Image (cartoon, rainbow, N blue to C red; front, side, top):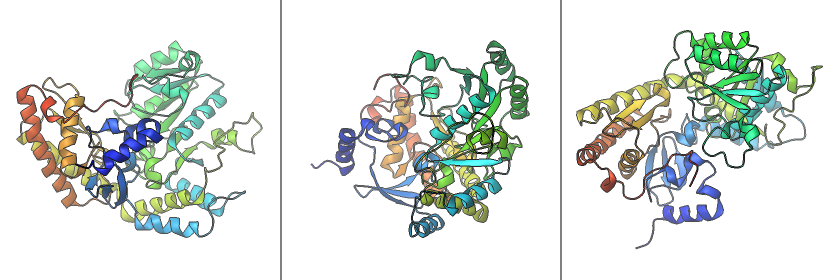
Length: 436
């Protein structure tokens, strides 16, 4: 029997690309064995693989495609600028318009500079903080999963091969939601911490007063605060979590939903800090996000179209409404099938994930494999439950039906005390691990 084209394509991917994908979170090891579809195309809330199978896709583009694939407002904007050239020896008027529109959308920022990916933006924020404070250390929130591909963060993960110990020692940690512990860390490294970098929320609203208290605490110690808004920006609020919670950080970074899948990220913040990378400041200059492709016009046109869509179509509210319907439905069917303590929906309605727990309530990659296999075999591509605005209530209800059938299998595995017979091969593996 001929192998499915996705399996053949995956083998070709591994021969040509280390890891078989350009992002570890998209790797074949993140899916059940032989069920990692290779995508041909997408439209709206759906994607098709190279074998012609159609899937309702959650977490589109790792949370980047919040409007749905090939959104007409975005594709029209990109098509228009492509007819006028996409990269020039001087800034284009599109750069100016995109920057002004961003600052109008995120009014807590004074200036913005665009990049192609979130890692460059967060690393630029760290560099600015070090330059502004004259301090060497970065304090990253230990409770958040990912900040950058650069050494200052990757050195804190199990995949630290190739990073000098001296570099790893330049990053310390603090816990989310715990001001006394953070203050203790700042006292331990008194006068050395340039910045605290964190996502403003861990998926639920922060404790009352926490973000404002963190900002005050940091400033008392001469330390800056950076909000990583790659996920929260637009998906939580078009103004970012800083607008939602009314707390303005010193610097912040945006990406993912900003371009609806096009490569654009942003570093935004206080004018006195951002001007360190400019031409109108007398201090030592910071080499700040100087990239050939950082402001190519199609991605900036896409970003402007996204910002327009969020304002005109009330996208954030739609994401929350769809997510709330999904969370309630999954919670209900999991409870009805006796696995309410094992199949658990977590996070803000617009940014849901699911936990797959074993009989002892511990996270289980084996049960995640079982659960995702059931979803995939029924046409749901669901590494998360992050919705897009292109989904309909019928899509959500269909997903709940698929989850219900998965819960039947989940319950059987729990009763058997072993999910292995239902895995169909090796289990899914964590992204961050020392050995392949």
